[in-house]
Image 1 (cartoon, rainbow, N blue to C red):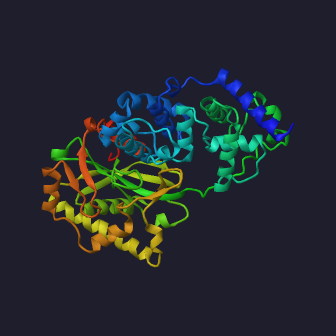
Image 2: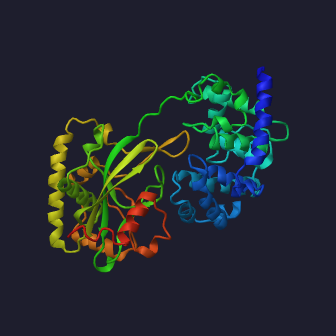
Length: 457
């Protein structure tokens, strides 16, 4: 069988299989371009089973492009909470506003206009145009490249741009006339259900008879893919600051910077531990220096809090970073006589660590970098690290006890003295109104549930 016959066999048998075996997914029930768009953004690097409840809730709260464009960003992020890659949600809302301003609220149907929407890359543009409008546009993602690599025995590295171009051309040639919507979804379905990464189900594959990779015994070695660098480990110290007095029953949280990793999400205050972050493996810091370092970082921001003990260990995994978290329960301090002691403990710890850091390259303590899209890595500006906190303390940039009290009691939101971030005290009732990364959502929820009540005993 020649190449043309092999292509014909693939397209015909794949479509026949799909029409019988396709899953009943909520975004497939309506030929709604907006639903298609939202689902494709959610499905980036996320499993279908995970996406379904998020999609249903999101569409329930933002049923139209206009509803999404006009919604407060905090509401959009809250509806995305736990789904990860939060820049997808921000880009989706920004693109919805583009559609309202430039296209009268109607999803554009030409490739340049779709591609110009924020957060839309070649794959998403192809998916929207083919699924929503049945246009013969290829939609090539990792699943599709895996299927095509195996079926056509393609040895090119799928991480290379030239290979993607090759795959897009090939996928475009395979689309039967007038069947782009079904064919592209069939190709995605085959990669998700049958031609899986580690254990392909070749015996149930509708195109197995002409699969060159299977015939050559290469189904487990294809596609060829350059290994990504392992994620960089970081040890971070996290404070669960328990309020006293006017803040009894509340904990201190802060909002991340407007750009970069987890932008504008709320979190528990935390600090990058050094010099552990410079090592190849992020090793836990001993409790005594860790608590002093944490107290000092809070002190530098204008908050007096005494760490009482280790509450738990946790881990948060990004594509290029792994946060190993040492979480300490802390108590807000409102007696001015206690503040100098906290500062002195922190100062001593910083002095000791500064000596250890002598000669260490400054790049070892730079802010984290994490992927916020398929191709871009965004920085994490404004996050305190051990080096700049030490500098703040040595420069005497600390609030007087009266300043701490005034800030804590007179305003619902507070500005950090050193990092300029927004802080506030929250109770359990605030959890439904603010968007947190999943790890901090779990930690704060556990605190309010009493999970760390025995830390001091």
